[in-house]
Length: 440
Image (cartoon, rainbow, N blue to C red; front, top):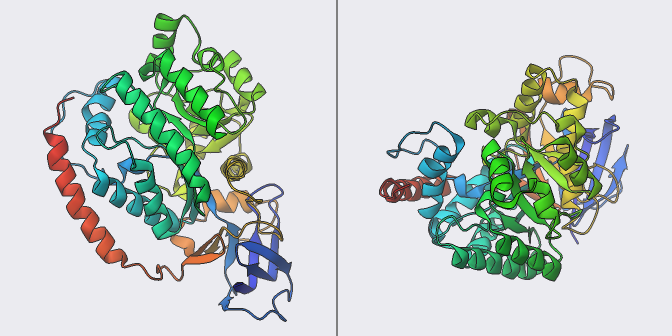
């Protein structure tokens, strides 16, 4: 049994009610918060005492949709053809990158994405992976990188037929099943059943994915209607709305996650809500790809916030999502967006035992310690405003995941971070050269 006590700190909840309490101790035993209150740690024999004076403790942030395979893409230098629409962007950029990934590249992508997430106060990443020339074993490689750094997460393989037809579909399903089963023995990572997007998955693929979900108990993780092409494709080839097509194979479950959904209609949103599915909004990626805005965002029941591979910094993502929403004349305020961000913990609870998302006795100890100097009062009524307008990843000083201090005073105990980044740069350079020779 190990115990950590954070002394004399301020606690801010990021799930409504956004209560703020000051001068309290947070007592952590093993992986669970045992007590929060004034003097709660006074009589505790602690293995580690953290001076929380002047600091703010919040629940760790959740990235509701990530692409770890993009970890080595930053500033990628390759020759690419025209990118005048979303399909061209995929073919000229991302689908070439993922075909260039091997085991080493996937591992370093995972390490880098995990480090960047933890540094930004993100304690859980919901990953969606693709590496068509390295499918079998790829999810274990991603999970190994996550656990090496100490971030919590889920991962899955995005089933698709876009490169090698049904053989690729079957291999992707097999990898999802294998990892979803074996990951139950892991501490920090679980498996979902992934799919790329409906326009690259034939009906037989969706059928196999439904069987995989029922066999493993894992939910779906799938892009839907990121671009209008996905909708048109579904109507053209299947004469169905996308969500109806998914529903016909039993893919809409309460532990499933649909991503983007910009071009879904109102009826489809209602059906997603009826099935209690989660829905990840990725404002920054949508802006970058110029695919439009999710006009139904305020109608989604289980909305969470992701980045679609644009890093793991949820402070940054939430700001951009909020500002874009206001630019689109939306009526939500910071509290609505902070609620959506924190709701990611409800998806986490579908895959891990315990309660997540509050700094409160009985909850899992996934926490971020911030050095945030508020120039105005920080209270329950304006805490969400401080999160959006004031707090940032620059404030993150230390991070605890599953009761373990994985980052302390901006340092990662037991990890040679400089060497990891240096080696990642070498791997990235090798991958870029390989990708540059891959035809769209």
